[in-house]
Length: 274
Ligand SMILES: [Zn+2]
Image (cartoon, rainbow, N blue to C red; front, side):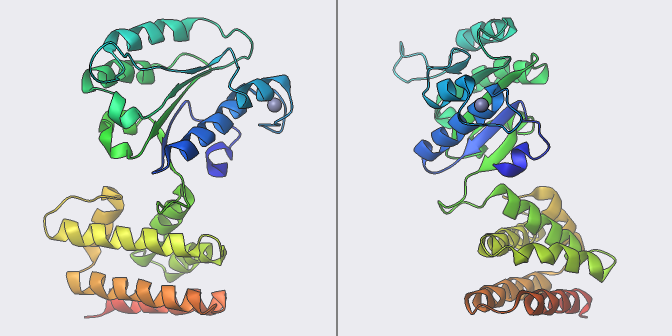
């Protein structure tokens, strides 16, 4: 969550992915408070804007209710068009407006997603959209590419920071200079994220394996391709084993400098192996 707002700017569209929809809702509430809070240190949690956001009584934060007229609760295309008009109207109280879509992965038919896409392509000023879902993959890739995707950690999913760290490590593995890998591996010094980072790295290595055998990448196609172009199947498998060893060492509380130096050496050794 912190990385999202680290630049002091909240992306105007965020997909919040979690197996636990209640957790996703709580995250959306916090981000909404961030969007409307007018204090320096957002969300301050105490100003009137924040209070209303946290109590779900803010006039400019709307939970978009799905249409219930049919058999299934869905966001109808007319609803999305009405919302697009509504988004043009100035906020009532704050200087931002927020629209929250719960269970976006099951309630958003493709036709409505396409209407919504137009809105994302030319978002009105100071409008924020938060889409809650169990799996972002259920949404159109064109929507996903215009949103920041946040995976909530702690429920078996891997946090966005860990994914970024793992991508940097993957890049370092095949980089020209060894120090790039060493630098990327330093992310492992965050004890809370170590396990998550290794798990994310494992997924990237698996992606490369799948790509090598003609399949489709799950985590990150680009990084997967990069790895697949420089590594053979045998090398990828050896690196996956290395991840297992790293997990063991983390469990045994190994000194972090030892771990990163050792991992760096091993990854590079496998890379250059004949
Ligand atoms: Zn506030």
